[in-house]
Length: 126
Image 1 (cartoon, rainbow, N blue to C red):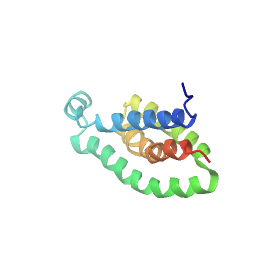
Image 2 (image 1 turned 90 degrees about the vertical axis):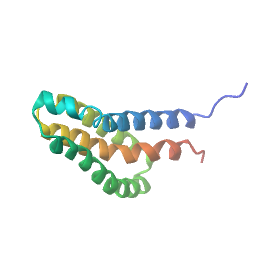
Image 3 (image 1 turned 60 degrees about the horizontal axis):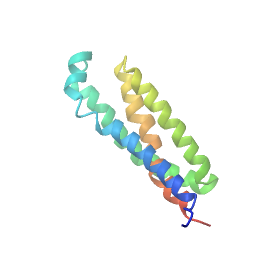
């Protein structure tokens, strides 16, 4: 029986981080009507969180790539995990539309590009 390379644990961590971030983001349209009815927020305001997420994700991808080249993927993965946790915690409060937009829209979008690239980058043996 051969022992698995440690890099596969990193790939699994990156996949889990991606699943959590994408699950939180892509569940928003499913619950759009109930959230709007319960909170009184407009559907456009709630949808803005998703729009903000995709715009931020596009910009953050280039920034994370540069930071990963400069500081290495391990440190950047830790920053991505912390941002994802902060974004999910902020979005969980959902007391104000702004916390939903910043939590789901910005913080998770900043973490998501890092999650998609860190696992495979760290798993490749040097």
